[in-house]
Length: 235
Image 1 (cartoon, rainbow, N blue to C red):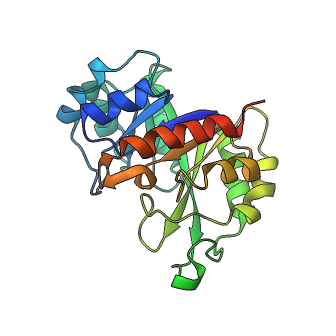
Image 2: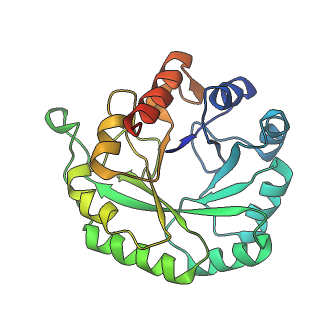
């Protein structure tokens, strides 16, 4: 199980995630309470184990800007968090030429949850549409990793809201050969094992679900999340 701890803003949190066994640490360059600069991340990445992926999350269509930030910040992976942009993916793939990997985010739109329906909000975007996009990404070949995240209103990440995992089971079960799906959106220490059991994803990605405040991780929750995710797939 590939585990990414996203929304890091400090060396302390990123190092702790690595020490506890995370496979990747993420830094948000898009507008967010967790937004960081290339200079801030450049001061963190040299102190992380080489085995840990350093992922930058971008909501930009400017390939040159993304590539420049990736180089300055010492990233090994860029996560494209906007809508699927084939030209952007093509340009980045050509520019990186394998030196930096790409993760494409797709969004499962959910309705704004009411107090009585906070756990399982209603699905608004048909799974068939996402399946079509996944197949298109697989054919293009710019990346083999796709992250499925919740979209609530205008917010496309860090919402703490899960999408409908029951409705998504067929989507995750029918993923094209060679494509790895990562689940995000509303994950926390209490439900990550449930998400893994339902969806059997290649990886999981968490940010707000293990925070003490936006951009700062709670060490106990961080440790518990990683332990729960590992235990969920243990033989």
